[in-house]
Amino acid sequence: MLCLCAFAGVLFLYSPALSGQFIFDDSGLPFSKATRHAPLPDWISDTGVRPILIISYWLNYHFWGANPFSYHFVNLMIHCVNTGLVFLVLLRLLKVAGWPRQRARVASMIGALVFSIHPLQTESVSYVAGRSESLASLFLLLAYVVFLYRRNEAISWVEALLVLVLFGAGMKTKENAVSLAAILVLTDLFWPTPFSIRGVKRNWRLYCLMIPGAIIAAGAVLRLLATSQTAGFSVPTFRWYQYAFTEARAIFTYIRLAVFPVGQSLDHDFAPSHTIMEHGAIYCMILLAAVVVVSVILRRRYPLFCFGLLMFLIWLAPTSSIVPLDDALVERRMYLPLLGLILIGCEVGMRLRFSPAAAATVLCLAGLIFGKLCYDRNRLWGEPDKLLELAAANAEHNPRPLLNFTEILIQRNRCDLAPAYLQRAELRLPNNYYVNAAWGRTLACLGHFDQALKRLQSAARLNSCSQVYEWLGLVYAQMGQSEEAGGALQKAVGLDPKSETAHGSLALWYEKTNDLEKAEREYRMAVSLDRDDAWAREGWMRVHAAKAERHADF
Image (tube, rainbow, N blue to C red; front, side, top):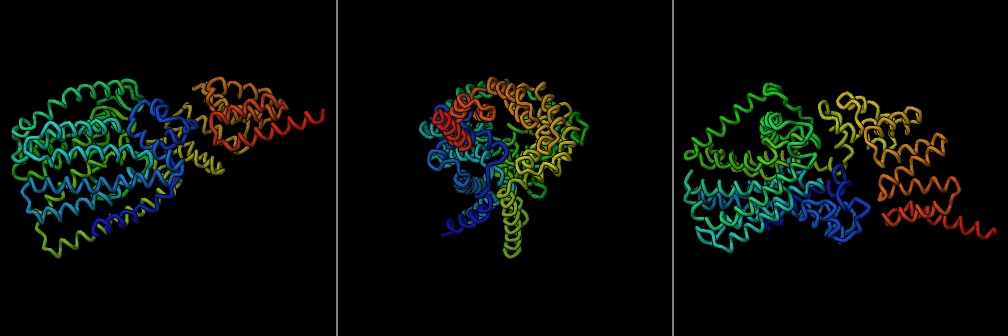
């Protein structure tokens, strides 16, 4: 009954987000592409990474189609399962730490409740693309539960193999799952006596199996980091040491958001620290080092606090260390690290020794505050345009929210509001493809075709891609320059023969120039690339009927 009540409460808090549309990175996932009807192997090969995650999306699409509700609902179910696993993890760790059974059970339930309703978790649950975090966490928590609840002190070969399989599934869902290896070692080092290597020796079977897999995984991650433009040492935004300076500050921002979750954002405007002095990075690095040293020194006196703190830092390490990522501060990275902070809260709560009435009052108040903030945050996820607007309003160092919100304004035909955001974006990104392309589309929307043409031509010089030539073709057509429009659209199709929108636009141009044969061919090609493209299908039928009427006249 208690579990059903908890589930109903979580469902209520997340219910506003279930109706939210796809947003942001969702548009780059396979179910949003024209190739969504392809078989599963094509989905996996199209992305090249995270096959378990892609399989989950494929199952979503296979059974429920492209309706956003089903994706949000599956995300929520994953989160509910994770909450149950967090309860089991907390219960075991508190018992190992020497807590009485009843106190450990109550604290574990409270900790699991905090995990389930904390507003920081909303990005991993209510954001469809955030499933990478929650699904990877599902496999990691399952592996950790198997490890913690092994039948004997020394893990068996079967249990070790099961942990390894679940660990691998987590790695195939998201690369930062690699941190589980360090969590397992930390757990064996800390309990029952910090820092004893007896636990590591006792579980030699697991670590013997893990070493080859760790080497293979490390090689795969290194190859990914060497080629990725959003993660690794080739990221243009940061050098490795600049990222370390920035993340030292980000870690304390994460802690502040966990304790005082105000100022959340879909796309944080977190200023980078290019030098160790910029934005006080040196003080955060000194404080961080001091905290780690103190945790080691006081490990026997405050074992749960120190273990939770080190766990928090280890879970964050893949994204908040020296390996640069395109984004310095992302809320969904706190999904599992929150578990470490909950352990710290357990130790603090025990040490403060509140009276039962005072403890109940504090917990109820915290639950009400977190619940209200969680619900309010999910209301925003249910109206993603507002999320983007809020991120753009606060953007000073990060131009991406400005460009994303500009896209929304263009789609909603509110182009008169876009120039103010684009001017701010151009200050941060002068002579940039995305800024010029957005300016071109905005100016065309406002009817300033000559200026739009210049902006799109500048964008084409910076990045000669199919999309920009398609936009150029449409602007030429609106200016009455039919020959130039046809040339641009033909180039768009040539640059990307698999673009259904380019084929559709070229088909419309052929239809306007009365070349019905070629128009029908292009419409047919657009429909073959995306069979859900109703506009292209209607164009195909319209041209086919016009051809039949022409033949009847003859």
